[in-house]
Length: 342
Image 1 (cartoon, one colour):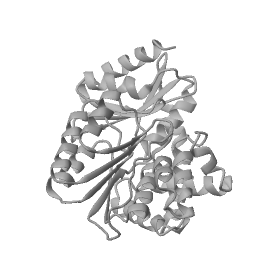
Image 2: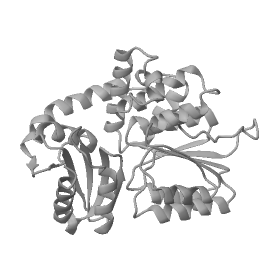
Image 3: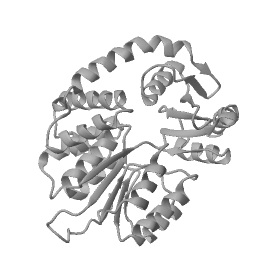
């Protein structure tokens, strides 16, 4: 069961509060929407895994909030200590911190998070938006179940125990249309935080993705990019024994490109990579098929951390940042690590 240790609100009056959530997918934005509705937060900040710690540092060190809600962030061995330090700093500033996540956490890390006074709501069995909806459902409008259903569907977790009855409440075609369109809107606007935050604001008014201004137009344009990119992606795939990988050269989200590589390569694991010159590192997105037997998030976390990078995530979906000079070593280690489990 999902932990639900959210106590009653101590005041009916608004307090200075912020929700910091993952910006790259429906589950992250859906989580922000649910917190915005449930807690009437005064600010939403959206982050990706690469800039998460820097943005958390800025908020906790230089801005004063009575409540901080963290959603769907995902941690790696490289940033765990920094994250714990920031939680301690928030505690020293008398901020009440609540953290919802479904990424893999070790028992030691979960215990350390709780020791900072943070209210941790965590399970790998349900996506983050479903956890939040389940914790607040008695006080949320019925419409909010739709946001949790979208998160579960797009995170491929719609058959999980809590998610399944939520998803079944809605016409599946309508849910799929809204979820996929919203996913495309998010992917097309990864460098436009203003659009993403306005999308959260729209949904928090109990609207649908099709109500987001210019949202469906954006999704249509992105769909055309997807169609035109398929052939280019297929021609760039390198196949190893257990791993297929390709550069992310098209104007699509890395998560979408890696799914194409996975489907076309007939390998249990696929990866796409892109060099970020400003940090002299490769940013990687990794996916596993149903044939993959390894927990990719844990494996990638171990390998990337040993090479001075960072990584982690779910059993079949994760990401990493690897120093430029370690890329080939990382590829070889990942292929070997997958082989050990097959």
